[in-house]
Length: 349
Image (cartoon, rainbow, N blue to C red; front, top):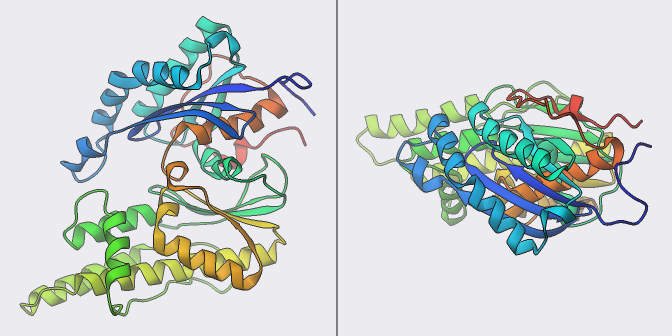
């Protein structure tokens, strides 16, 4: 096995995450101990536009990246000389936003004489679970975020195989679109989640299972069903049952996600089920998955909300795996908005 580490020497990785609308820098020890995790969010800026504006996001990253790096080092009480490597999200994400982080990471690696580790954003979300508990292999991950909805099998450390993915909208994207239809601002997911848990009854909405045995997902039809329900009420001169529709939408989404995730765990003999991504902070999904896994005797790991949304600690956790097996990469690395998770798998096997 290739290794970039000494026998017993601690590995300190400074990690940078700028794939979308959070500027985050963290210092992570040995891939599991978070010494600092600073996050500068742009939510308030983008709320006025109803979603993330790529050019605005890039400019905001440029404005704060240096300050966030300084704060992360200060909070971790570590000097650049003590760092083992510098990691950064290489992709996927918004190309302009990614470039800010990549340029910053390259500059630091060159100035400090440290190796560079290009890191996959979704691998970071998956390995956020290692910040909670040691992972066992094989395991299955349900990835639910604003841009991704996938079931990922890891038979060994750092080896990823996607067995199912969304064919259209990601879960987080669907939540935001439904929230907008119901009259709520960006980001809409927390509003839908809250209303769904407050509603007395659920508005009946379809479950999209696709072909028998499929692990893929589809949410565009469900989103359209919500829009139809809202429009039909308005055409009749009635106020839409916003809470009921929110509950119906959430129950439909959650039932399909939970059922397919549990079935995947069984079929692939996974020892653990991991949940990750921004939508992993959704209380309805967390509760439903917790109850189902308890009933099925499946070990479930869910990171706390701070490690579900975009953050640099998760990038440090994933980068540690890459470092352990492959070491650093050349400084001519480029940002890749379409970066493949499976191709990022470690090459030590």
